[in-house]
Image 1: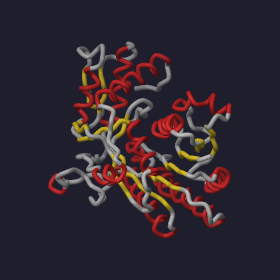
Image 2 (image 1 turned 30 degrees about the horizontal axis):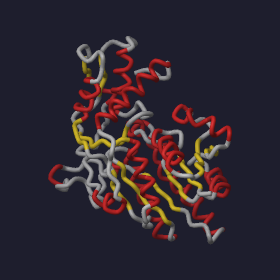
Image 3 (image 1 turned 60 degrees about the vertical axis):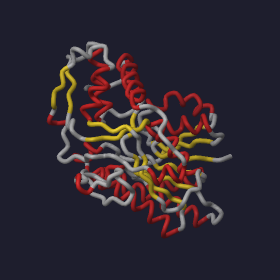
Image 4 (image 1 turned 120 degrees about the vertical axis):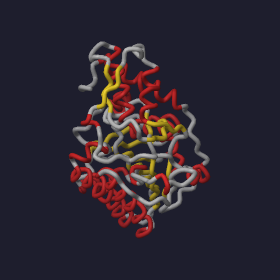
Length: 343
């Protein structure tokens, strides 16, 4: 039986990837999570976990090398999707050391655990996806942005400790491919969102606040940060399909790809789209909150995904408006159930 290992299975992307693999393959899915990881995003899978029905959870931590070695030795996955990270750019400004340790050294610990297993078992050759981020490109001056968008060869100019950590993650993936012949591919996914998106991200906190306003829990004011940043959006369900195609469509060791959606707009346009779906759209006021502003911000995030599309044939399928409607409906449901913190 084919085995896939997902680090960060309890996150938005990891949980959607598990859903995709369970629905579209016959693989067994092994999820790595920390003992304290919240299980909200995988709540619908827990019955299958308890019944050992193709879904299995193993406890490990990117900051604990032995736990990773133990999981790799136990599972010996055919495919590894490394999605776990400290993934919040704004948080990284207040927790830079934790971010760098988790994302850079954590990735190194995982790849080293796989390398050690390959050294022990010469017939073991897993296919590995390392998830970096479009944030590695950071602040690209308009005059330096390629005409067709940011391609794989654009220089890195990270604008946060998180982005710096993802530069390290990106380079480690390529290093292990080149140094040890491991089949590692790295992706730089641009903004991807949808149901289960964390509320530290702009479009998700907008949706959450709108849902709270509709329920009368807060006054009709949406608190915002920088609305002038340009973003290109993909649906998380398209993103995980891309990750599946990455590891199954003639994987090339050491390759790296930009992946992203096809709809580009300013953050303020995203906010206006979400407000337009609200039952309180005529009452909502937009208020800038200085605490939501990053010291510096990545902007002009427009990807050139031609390399990945040419290699795999992937194309985004879910329209932007549907993604935003589904995100707002997700928060409406959570707010009604009381499963949220403050705005």
